Length: 184
Image 1 (cartoon, rainbow, N blue to C red):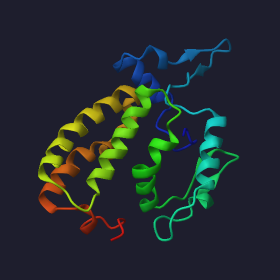
Image 2 (image 1 turned 90 degrees about the vertical axis):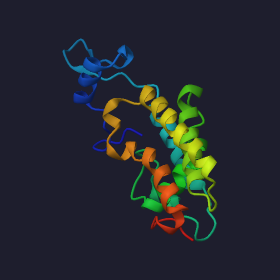
Image 3 (image 1 turned 120 degrees about the vertical axis):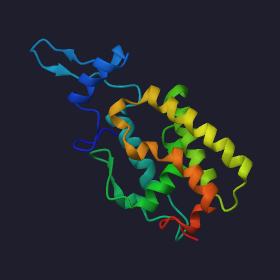
């Protein structure tokens, strides 16, 4: 959501992007007063879109014990979510991400929906080996789709982790017995 100090989309990342990737629409542009301008990426929200998402999150009512009151974690004026705990991030990623970002073009929304479905399937109470094998194949494709949309600066160790989570589930069984923020 392009939060100042939190985003990985900065001038250095854009310079690396123009050097190593073929995304001319994201290259830095010089303005008339010799300053560098970052063109908005297709996955970026306008301030109006950020406010709409924040208003939507503020209006959400979750079942008791399912997630905290996300409405208290919203700053509509600045268009940001703040202080969200790991379990709430997990709920947002599994349940709310596809709904929140449905306004994006299909080539951006579809991978978001697929990663959400991946985590929903991974966290189900019963896992079948054949489904996990298919999920292991799918997560590689999903990651590839995300790499085509998001800048390379976004991807670090944590974005690579889902590839290994399926193997972990094959070895250890359902994640609710191992992940601390999944309620039983």
